[in-house]
Length: 285
Image (cartoon, rainbow, N blue to C red):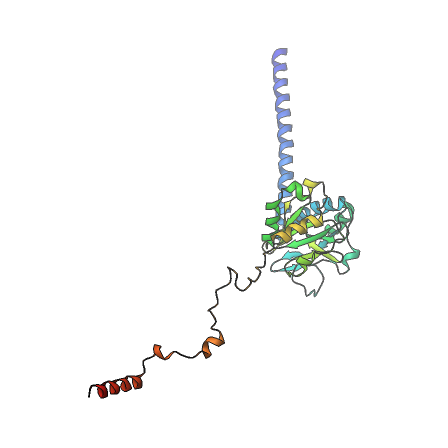
């Protein structure tokens, strides 16, 4: 009898423990379902902006930790960029604050405080930590074709429209050979550039050579500018007259040859022939 009672007690305890476990699992599932319902009840646009804000704030904080000056930019909203300022007439990429030079962030805490307000684009102020040489794609590609990445010595960002941005040590002017080209720009004090992973109308800004590869050091401006100059199309010099590349000119007749008398024997004279006939007939008669 005691054995039967003990067996029944053990079975009852196991069922009670199994029921408690199922109750705990049900509570976890219920909590998960509650969270999903609340998340799905939020507007889709709000969720998307929260994800974008986190995706942009992390690299912005990383740039600031390495001494780069970061500022929030207008984010892409439909066909234009939205900075949040009412009546802003600028539709392209631009800083989200009016006095942006006084609003740059120098540390991760400053970035977190600014990006908490929205999914701002990541912009980098130039002229202090580095300058940026912006060139067309064909010149940028020529630079990395001529030298390996380690020899270039600094990061390169690429915008989706094909503009290459070389981060250089600040303070060096643009070479004279490059100032003549409107498609080559040197960003220094008072300027900024978009940084990865900022969204543009045609795609995202990306790193061709990531700064982590160089320990967030930037390249030598003289080296990069010399490589861009070497990639410029060469102007063909005008060939000298009479050279092999120059077309041959027709021979010129000297004026003296034009004034020389014409020998009469070269041109038949009908009057002379008549006189000779008359003289011959008179002789035979």
